[in-house]
Image (tube, rainbow, N blue to C red; front, side, top):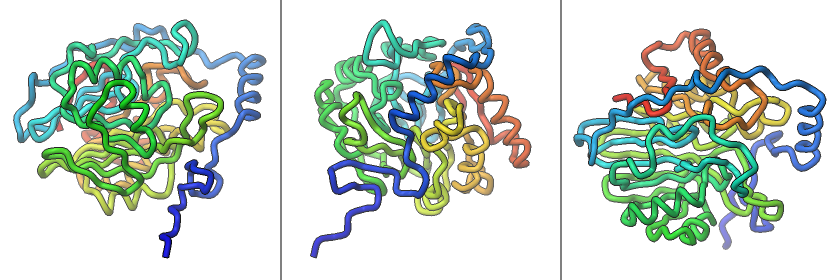
Length: 329
């Protein structure tokens, strides 16, 4: 007897968000948003100098085995040092989040750590195939400089990663688990979509990741809207020492709600994960690097702090990093 197909799989060899009311807007919605931006002035933004790049304090080549430290490189790219190994999330070091070199969102802030300045990379987590997370140039350079790194990607993304020269690739479905040395990696549900062009929508999966390394546990949400599985993730794979959660790219809400959390939802997801009862540190990422949506670039940190205070969470458990900043957990 054939096993039932998971709810996020579609019979047409595609994937979907399985929760009601979470389908991302299609072309008509994109057109509506574009027209609104033409007739309505965008929210005022800060000068780019308000986002300084600070000196990183990661240990090279590797930190001590009992250290857990994270360095925010920018957007969803972070270097996590844990169990004496180096882990990298969604490596995006390119100048534009776009298939075209002269069009599309351009970086506001240089990477907090240059790709050539990274320590030896042992594990890479790649959450989905959007251009602001899967940058072909970055992947090719990483493959050449760190050929022994183990890459973990969602279903059907392995072929594109291997085409960039990566040799050690493991594809995972939601809740599937695999190992690489000291690391046990589980792909977790996320509420998003995938596409590199107009004809491949949802042909590859998207996900977050839970990582266990020694006695430390880390959660990287990837790119996601708020969904009902955060609590199950925390109960099944936590408690976490560190949760990297996206807090930016959320306006207008009628368009972005299915695919990006706003700060209030990110704080809610943190609580669902059990972070408020297990001394988890939340690192607020996915803001201040690319201008992707309509909110001011400096709004996500302020709204995240306000939501945190309103939830009466401990101040020392929230970290809103500067580009390049390193924090020990």
